[in-house]
Image 1 (spheres, rainbow, N blue to C red):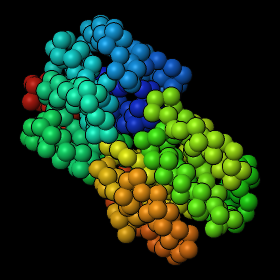
Image 2 (cartoon, helix red, strand yellow):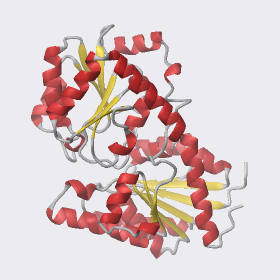
Image 3 (cartoon, helix red, strand yellow):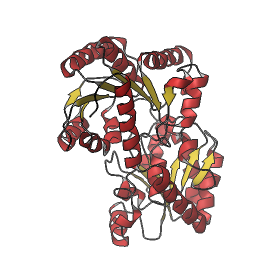
Image 4 (cartoon, helix red, strand yellow):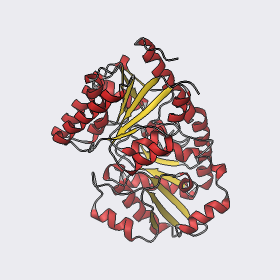
Length: 393
């Protein structure tokens, strides 16, 4: 292994972001880059530090706007970067991006990268929209380079004058992390017995069809429309089940009505938060993502890699992850009727499910393998370091 002569710090608001780094850290270490991570503290951070063998620093960064706590987090981050003295700071998520770029600028870090993984201000209004938009502009201004997870989000960033066109780019075909399509998300790794055992554990009968959802269970993910579509579909198809792989969050909570439906319906399975999701995709027949806002959702790519067709909304981010009519179906956001019709088409046409699932895996293998993104990321780091006169080995 090459000597670790370059120090890189990843910064993000939530420890959930660390899932995006799995697979990349080992690649970067092999190429001479020592990785540290900074995010809000918690069990996920501790587990990641132990598993990946990297230093981790817990700094509380609430997702919501909290001026006093944000100033405290900025001071702590400034001190942390002063101790590490990194060559590169790569900050992610809106709050982590803003604080990371300010702290990196104050510490005169040679290479500062802001990774735009979504634009929360698009689904807000009033003063909150103005504050969120301002934070994006500041993060872009203080960064030497701005990366974007998808071409559609990049276009919006340019049109909104958040970042100059020549400063923002998409690596490879996009995506926040790529997909381990030949390892974790390979349908060949899950035989009929493995699938039967998991179905049995979840009380899903043999022969039942499964609609799946993977992610945070919050309003912005389209849970109202999913609940309405489910209410229609469950009456038409007695052998249909809804599998929700994720958990509720206090920020942007679902309504009491939706929460009651999800908890009381015997044909809805709510797993809670799950780290290894591949086996759950293996027992799905259709994945749904009725979200209102995305950067580049990885769950459609993971489902495609597992040969599961996807029904998602026609919004920035999702239009990059799903090829309408080829790997899945795109429907208008906030349209429960269109969501119902798209899912029902797959229920009634098993050959369509198979065709779109097969095409989805072929696309992931061609464009979104994790090692492709790791290589593109490393080469980007190397170019920026060379431009700053930093030897990269």
